[in-house]
Image 1 (cartoon, rainbow, N blue to C red):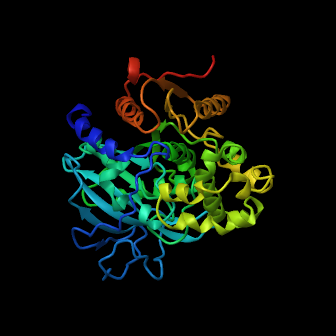
Image 2: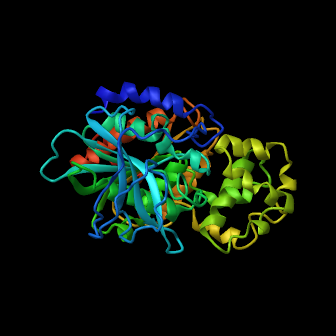
Amino acid sequence: MIDSSWSRSRAVIGALVLTPALLLAACSGSESASPTSSTTIVEPTSNIALAPFAGDDLYATPDPIPAGDHGTLLRYEEVTGVDVPGGTAYRIMYLSESLQGEAIVVTGIASVPTADAPDDGRPMITIAHGTTGIADECAPSKEPERSEFTLVAGAVGDEYLVAATDYEGLGTPGRHPYLVGESEGRSSIDALLAARQLPGADSGDRFATTGYSQGGHGALWASQVAAEWAPDLEVVATFAGAPASETDVVLTASARIPALAGFTYMIVAGFAAAYPEADPALFLTEKGVELLDAVDTGCASDTFAAVAGTPVNELLRDDAGSVEPWKTLGKANNAGTEKTNDAPTLVVHSRADETVPLVFSELLLGRMCNNDQVVERRLIDGGGHGAAAIPAYQQAFDWIDARFAGDPGEGATAVTDSCPT
């Protein structure tokens, strides 16, 4: 299943990793692609009838937001410009819920295989994407040919129902809660719930979570929230490539490492969007607060450029990272902090990664082992942060296939526990 479409995916990942200094930045800042068909309103799972959608912009937020369960599919449109061999791609809008309990809409992209579903329903994969930025124009579904969705769906979309969230606040109102784990997890799970309502979805109830870089963080959090957020579904496997797992380390180290300034700005803006108590003025200087709006214009590379010319000590307070509530919130958003299911986790990290330090996955492994989670950490050679996504995902696909097949596997497909015995 992998080999027939992997060559297509290699071309996609080449576009994905244009800037290795970013956490897999995938946004060029272009406007939304034009819909390729009329947008469709579907009946929510809660059976609440909605008024027909009369506009032509899927990303325009309904006013008011319809009542319904999180994960309810509100709109979908077929995307004909994306190559999903053996499948059909759709942009989607669905209901979700913010950390403050407010109803929100989130967008994303999904694909449905064209072949008949197996008797027990299609296996499913949900994708948490790498860093693109915070502004709405950075939503991956607006340029799906440059996103992990095309990489994954191009390889396995003929058999798997695939869903990829844009995350809360990307493509829809409000700032994206960057590296806020529960928000990423909810958005990822709800994208999958919405995709199950697409025409011909015929899904089962078993799924895997996947992601690289920021997406590795998001995939781990999707697995962590799944039992509570979607109790009728079963996590079969979790793949986290080069996960940006240590949010507290980034916040604490940002004052000493100027290269982290762009990431720190996105974290500060994202945390402030998710947590009312996260006052940026407690972390940033007055000048730093003045520059915070830079996250709302352009994508990740633009945020980096906006703060690159200013010394870090002029942007961050002396106690940044150690002052509350930032210290507690940073630690609370680390990935892998508790065991939530018995599904195995695969972590793949390149020894040559110049963006996400190897120590991140080492610390992650230690936490997960302490929680009795079955986790394998693989270190691979060759390729920096961006280029390593190719072999990391390739290993993940084979490994995930074996988990769905109930095959103990051998070699690269075997479940191997890296935790001390």
